[in-house]
Image 1 (tube, helix red, strand yellow):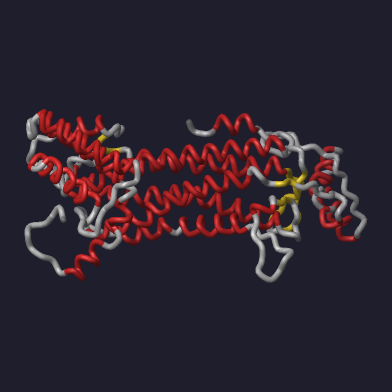
Image 2 (cartoon, rainbow, N blue to C red; image 1 turned 60 degrees about the vertical axis):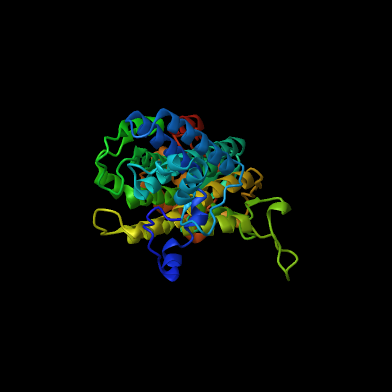
Amino acid sequence: MKLWDKGISIDKKIEQFTVGNDREIDLHIAKYDVQASLAHAIMLESIGIISLEELQQLKIGLQAIAETIENGTFVIEASFEDVHSKIEYELTKTLGDVGKKIHTARSRNDQVLVALQLYYKDNLRLINEKTEVFFNTLLTLSETHKDVFLPGYTHLQVAMPSSFGLWFSAYAEVLIDDVYLLNAALKTVDQNPLGSAAGYGSSFPIDRELTTKELNFSTLKYNVVAAQMSRGKSERTIALALGSVCNTLARFAMDICVYNSQNFGFIAFPDELTTGSSIMPHKKNPDVFELIRGKANKIQALHTEMVLITNNLPSGYHRDFQLLKENIIAAIEDVKDLLDIFNYAIQQVIVKEIDLNDAKYQYLFTVDNINTLVVEGMPFREAYQKIGSEVENGTYKPDTSKQHTHVGSIGNLCLKEIREKFPK
């Protein structure tokens, strides 16, 4: 069954190519198509297109379908083009002519669009929640290990003193920037496109404000052409936000892989979280973090894909838009998993004590020692040259007593302020 079927047969090879794997992908948006169909039916009754009795029948029919989706028994067979044709078929099979009325005053274009927008809204909120859980975990780790020394690096060279408290809370605060972008993406998709039909509205006197309220959208996408043009723009915006989250996850995972290696040895994880080698019995590989890094980097490429699929398309609907669904939905599902597994694994981190007497850390305190000389009255440039000469001629002796007290430093992490900064 196809919503656009006019009784003319179509070449099976063409049909297989154009449908692709929409049936599998559409399982993610099935419940949202039911929600949108219910709101649409309520609206049709309000303007007199269907009767109250017909509305009640559609409510019962849609509720029955929603229950099969909820319990996992809903299937889109190969005889259906997509979830939308399957749901209309089920309504028609149960309700007869009443089921055939559900598509009045809408097109598959706005039907797909509104279901996707609802899916995006729910899942961006869920990603936001999972990000906040991860954020709170990192701040807890920061508080727990705030006084544990960690060498700071620039250019992968030993640089200045840091701490595990500073490291954990750095990634926590960077997540806030990612949430700003997630919220921007959420605001972008929180606009009701239903009623735009095929992109040019309808001659029926539909009530778009009613469906906006029923579907809990914050506002309408008023212009019907603009509503169709949001296809692609929404995906590009979401991909940008997901990529920002994944950039943070990938960089953090890289730090963990480096710090976990024998050459650094700053952290470890329980054996159950690592994997071994088929020939090297000593190996304890941080595969979970390597896979987080790899998957997160893959998702960062998604924005480019979304741009290239939709770039320079003229206004109106184009079948290219179908190609957006698979990878944007896969990315959303992956980001939820990445946040969950990262949060689970990082809570089991073993923070090690680092020996400051190790020769490779002797120059960590050169800047602190320069600052001490400056406080004692020596001009900065002379102090810099004095300590530099001591380093060069091997007479430098580090003084590790200097305290860092300014806002955001190792001695003043501002965890309370960072926590309060997280968008609510």
